Length: 160
Image (tube, rainbow, N blue to C red):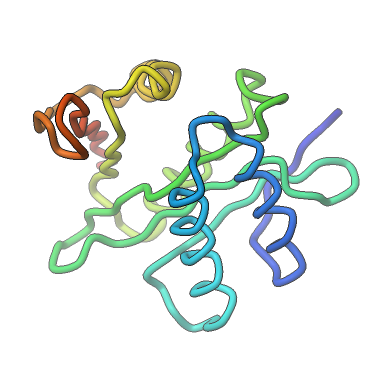
């Protein structure tokens, strides 16, 4: 199976919903928030708060995506809001391709840094290792951020 990267289209929504539903670490609330950003982007082509890049299979169906956008009130700082790959294809390089595409786009936009926040929970161990492997050092931990015993961990990569 090969994959290619492309922009998001209205027809992709149901495929993205299915992709999110199939990721064990995403609960119903996570899925709803992720789809809310998809809906915002699909309903207003002129908005620039939520940018998307999709990885699609040979049948042009979504197998992964990244959502990112500018951090309000900053100059060249961006947040990665979501990055997801279908569970059966995790670890095959699709996430890395998506992350590289985001970085390339941000460099074109004169982005200076990309900030990624995630959970310290065991369910996100592979996610945190993915960020470290891709050159994102852990820069901050806020204890008990999400709930007692679940910290927010922040990774930052400078792009300039």
